[in-house]
Length: 162
Length: 114
Image (tube, rainbow over all chains, first blue to last red; front, side, top):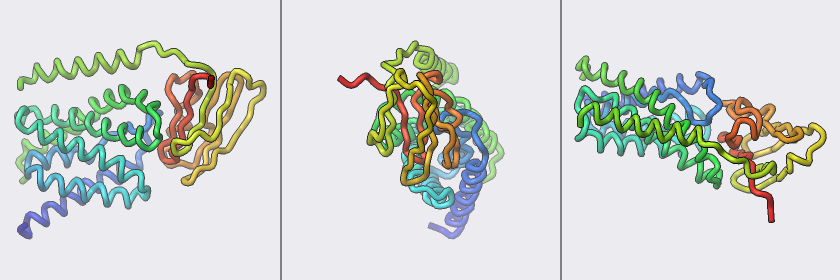
């Protein structure tokens, strides 16, 4: 790991952590647990495409652990970990079937995967399948917010920042 | 894959979600089970409630004040950060179980005990 790569990853972790904590301060006007903009998804989608999945994973894991400390609740760690890892896996699979002009598609599917992971943890934590009733709402919101964050990542990629 | 193919896939997901949301749900009964950390702490038969009643549910992470009225139940206030449980409104009118994930509280309607 070169110093340049380490510095770049640290900077990107800081960026996604800022997005994560700022977003946590914004109240969500929807009475459905788990609905959020997912701004940190921008960094995730961008990093998998621009600097490779391995570095993207290290940024993601650092952000999740630090983010849970910042928000100050242990359960946040499990929710983000399940969602983050699942969306990373989906991004990895999508690398072969999407082009650079279809990055927004990755954003959508990554967001849906993130919400799926979160629901799975919610089922495990509440030990009840009742929270599955929220799955269709979360999938719909994931499609909208994921499309938005995916488009952000796509525009960033077309600017050749790296 | 072509963008059009993806759009078809998204349309399919959209239809499935819309069906799942719009599908008429029957309410099993008016018995509300209150769960903390997956354990039932209380069970209220809403059809037998005659007077409004407030109960404070204490959990390890905080407390939720629930209001029980004849035929319905809601979370009136809570000290959780997101306040989603309060915004969810009344059960069964909202059609979804009431959850407060920060406190791991769940209120759902369930089948009458045999």
